[in-house]
Every structure is written in C-alpha cells, then in structure tokens.
Image (cartoon, rainbow, N blue to C red; front, side):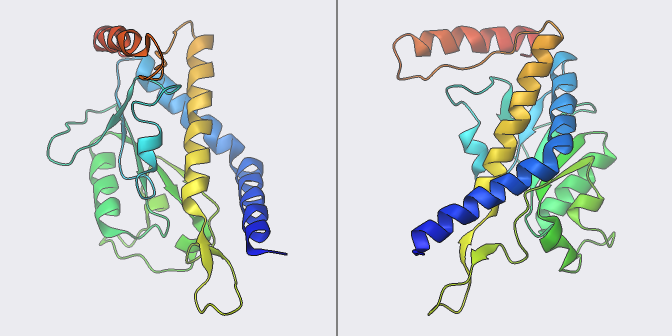
Length: 215
C-alpha cells in the first residue's frame, strides 16, 4: 500500500474513532456554548492545535460569535466560554491559562489527546494536566507523540493526527451549537463568504446584529 493510501486510511480511522468515542462529549460542549451565547456570554478560541481556530473564525458558513482570544487584550467574564488546546496536555502556558480562567468562573473546553496525556508527566504546579483542570475535555484521539505512521527509512513516525481531528471536532461542536440554538428559537448568525456576491454587506449587517444581541 502506498504511503498516500496508508495516510488517507489512517485519517479515516482517526475520524471514525473520534466520531465513535466523542459524540456525547461533543454534544455536551455544543450545549455549553449554546447556553452561554443565548445568555449573553462570549466564546473565545485560543491556539487550537496550531491555529485550527482560523478555520472557524470569520469563515463563510461559520458563526459570527466565535472570537479570538488575545492575551493581555481580551477580558473574559464568568459565564464566557474559552476553547484551548494542548495535544500532550502539558503545554505550560496553555495549562496556566486554563487554570487561571477556570478559577475566575470561565468555562474552559480543551482539545487534547488522552493517550498522549497519560503517557507524560504534568509540569503545572498543581500536578495536573490540562484535562484534569478544565470544565470539559474533548479527546482528539491522537496517539502519544502525535504522529500516526511508521515509514520504512524514517526514524520518526509520519503524519500528525491532532490537527485534522481537532478541526473535525470543532465543526462538530459548532453543528451542535447551531442546532441547539435553533431548537431554543434563537437563530445564530452564520457568515457568508466575503467573496461571494452580497456576502460582505450581509456579514456587515450580521456583525451589527451580533453587537446588539450576541448571536
């Protein structure tokens, strides 16, 4: 089997594992976000697995309410939701941030690899890893040390798992948010592509509505 075929099969298997094992947690995450948004809370994305957050922020087909967390500039309040990520669960600045926000009443949802986290020691002063600190942890099902495939002739394994899994998870969570809000009678603002005719004007009006009602 070619490396291309092996890689694509590994991705199919990875996403199937996420779908099979994380459905309930994804549902819970979506409900947390929907509850926050419909009650005036804000939703912030921070460094999700090497910038996966940019696939959701200001994207055609994505919700207007996702915002980027900027350290030193963004003020979070109790009831807000923040998504963070560390595949190993021990990235110190991420764990520090999550710990601080949880203490302040922010609901923190983490994307991490449980297999990876269980294979390493925590470095946070609490003695805990990311999944042991946050409000809710989503397992991206990446293997320990991240890469999926042994390749003859290479010392290190090939093909990172967490990025594609995290993107799949975040859009799955967003699907739950949208459906839950619609069921509550709240129509979430979904952006159109800026480059499609009329998209820019539509999005400008959507952002104005967001400033007024939060979604």
